[in-house]
Length: 394
Image 1 (cartoon, rainbow, N blue to C red):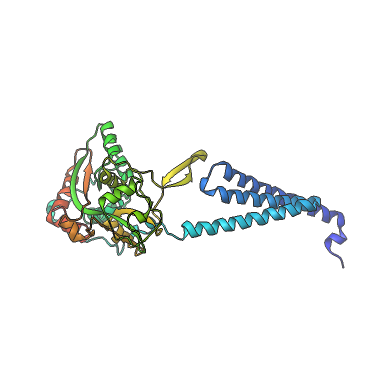
Image 2: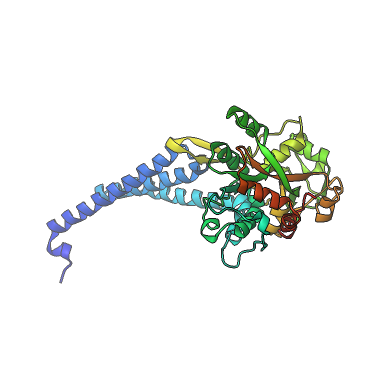
């Protein structure tokens, strides 16, 4: 008993031809997709996109060669497919070895554990004295820097009703580059942040507004390296030399590590980047490391690269963020000018780079905002600051 094709040769050939045409059309579509990936300019995916292009073209040509019985074309297509697979595999191995095996530190913070009214959250519990209790009909919208979230989230949990404090639009979490924009635009009523950058000051002046700032806590501006980096201390002048491009190798700091310094930076307008700019003073800062991604209509957007914990990397942040929020045991905080960034050294002023955080507003403060500000400056509020892991301003 023969096969269907043997019993119905004409119909079998027609079905085979239709299937091959369908496959060819599908593969042609994949080939066009690979071409599009390259054309839109996805810089970080040019090689993968090119491999995908060659692979799809090879499979397409293989199908055409099988359809028209072109043996040489099929052989060429086999080589193209194999080359694309080998190149893509080697590229992935290279990426993993040089970058992929080093995790991005900023992605590890469990922010949900600090949400107001979330079950078993890590926020400090506090009783609000009668004098500071808010009028529930006019509750301000809060926003703030990531590093300060545990403080103002604890305030919201203590001073706001559950149905308000648990809503994201009333207790937001954004970076300093975003919260100042929202404050000026009227999208929030008060922010918890470091002092504004020069550009943020200019934005307020352009909008005809003026920042009203009330200090409420302090923290250390810290620098960190991979835990296996032998360097333990940097001087302020060495930091300036690194971020101005004068020092490019760890050998210029300490001879035990003969490798290039990979100095990471943060986004313009972020609290830590603004603090670095203040530390640098009039000394120009080298361009930050970039990470390319695709924008709208094929544009390329250069983001500031997030910190990856390479052995030669240098990053900066704030003590509480680095030690309490990240809790990454693979990084090591450095002493600066011979002084470690401990709570005691921040409190006594020995650590050279201490950052003060503020409640910032730009419009007349309502009674509720004044009560929040007064409470946070009161002994009970400063106790909340200390129990949250920061240093009081007293």
